[in-house]
Length: 258
Ligand SMILES: Nc1ncnc2c1ncn2[C@@H]1O[C@H](COP(=O)(O)OP(=O)(O)OP(=O)(O)O)[C@@H](O)[C@H]1O
Image (cartoon, rainbow, N blue to C red):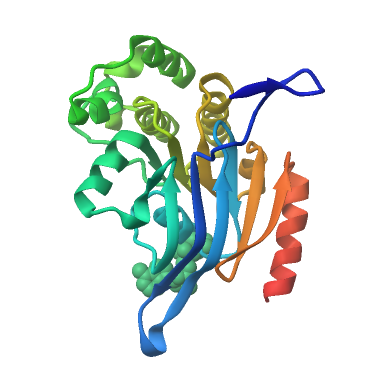
C-alpha cells in the first residue's frame, strides 16, 4: 500500500515487511569451537526499501543474510519471507521458494561461462519454466546498460559488466527480495558506482526490496537504512545514511567491540 507523506513524496506503509526474523539465533560448531554467530536478532526488511547491513568482521552479517534468504537454517527463532515461514519449511519447498521469490548477487559473479549475458540473465526464468515479463525485462536491460554486449559471453565482458548481468539475473523474476553479499567487493570504484546505482534504480523504479551486506560506507550510503551488527546482535541503525555518518557509526562500533 502507498500513501502521500507530508513532504509530498510517496511512502510505503510498512504493514508487512518483505522479510523478517524474530529471536533469530545461529550457533556454529560445538564444544570449544562453538560460535554464536547470531544472538536473538529481531529485524524487519521493509518492502520497496534498500537496507545495508554493516558491522565488524565476524559480527554475523553473512550469517544473517544466509538465514533470512533461506540458504542456512537457524538454530532457533523464526524467519519469514512475506507470509511464508522459512524456518518451518522442508528443504524441497525452501529450494522452490528461493528459486521463485529470492534473487542473489554475490561478490563472485557466478555467471555460467558458456551462456551469453542474455542467457545468463534469463536462466532463472528458464529453470522455473516461466516466460519473461517483457516490460520488466526491457526496464531491467535498459537499467543494466549493456547495449550491444547482451550476446557476449562473460569472458568478453568487464568485471563491472559481469556484475551488472548478475544483478539483472537477480531482478528478472521480480523477486520479493534481492540479497546482495558484498556485491562491489571485486569491482573498481566506477564499476561499483554503476552497480550500486542499478540496485538503487531497482528500488526506486521497480519497487524492489534490496538487502546488501557491505564493508564500504560509500556503498551503504546508497541504501535507505543501515543496520549495524556487532557480536551477532543488531546494535545500531541509521536512516538516510551518508558515507560520513556511516563511517562515524562504524568507528564507534569498533571502539566499543575492540
Ligand atoms: N560455517 C561456519 N562454521 C563455524 N563458524 C562459522 C561458520 N560461518 C561463520 N562462522 C563464524 O560465525 C561468526 C559470524 O560469521 P559471519 O561470516 O556471519 O560474519 P561477517 O560479519 O559476515 O564477517 P566478514 O565481514 O568477515 O565476512 C564468525 O565468528 C565466524 O567465524
